[in-house]
Image (cartoon, helix red, strand yellow):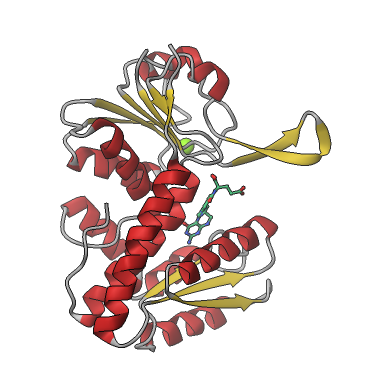
Length: 297
Ligand SMILES: Nc1nc(=O)c2c([nH]1)NC[C@@H]1CN(c3ccc(C(=O)N[C@@H](CCC(=O)O)C(=O)O)cc3)C=[N+]21
Ligand SMILES: [Mg+2]
């Protein structure tokens, strides 16, 4: 059996096109473009690539894209002042502070300072609480994108066993909440979980978000399962040590022989993250303008 490849890149392109249409409708109704502000502190090369990609995707979809770059030695107070300025700016709908932040800055303090109604990452405790309660709020982009791919592939998730490997605040925990809200039976596994391969083999849905390159092997996968690989790991390229290669948390070549469907890396979950960021920003703009929030998926 060879798994179907879940084309996140194509799905994300479709989502971005739908968002672009809704952005045009918003701009006509509100008399201004919806606006996303992305704050980058420092010069981490990977972060620069992500921020550039977000900027390009936002402009292509018709958003006003505001990029704020601050030096690597920026103090916490200065970053908080920047966030306060963006909170107070009525022309800004969504605020994203790129993580990780330099070590002199406590990311929790920064996240807490963002207006929850502009928190398009869904990282603010108010939005984390809303997700837990099942009340309207912003859902983190990566898990929301994974849910769109799962619903597209499987439809109703009721009663399926979902195993989420990884318990981070930005992926594992919110992913588990979303699966639970969709009536899946959810297990959260992590680095201390005993008999992880045996547990994974009971999963109808396996979400890999541990940040360990190619950790999950084909023989950990239940035949026919749907595998969502959230990992984005840069590893040395064996063919050319000067270069790196992007791999997931799943060993793709062995997993593809067991799974029913699997997301590749790159081209799976990553592109969805950016498309959902745009969908969340449009939601924020509509809510702030008192317009009806369009259906994203
Ligand atoms: N406040 C904040 N919000 C985030 O959402 C956030 C963040 N900080 N910090 C970093 C992580 C990571 N992240 C990704 C976005 C897109 C791809 C993506 O498009 N990946 C492409 C490949 C890109 C490449 O080649 O490097 C793919 O998987 O096909 C990956 C990872 C968002 N993050
Ligand atoms: Mg862990």
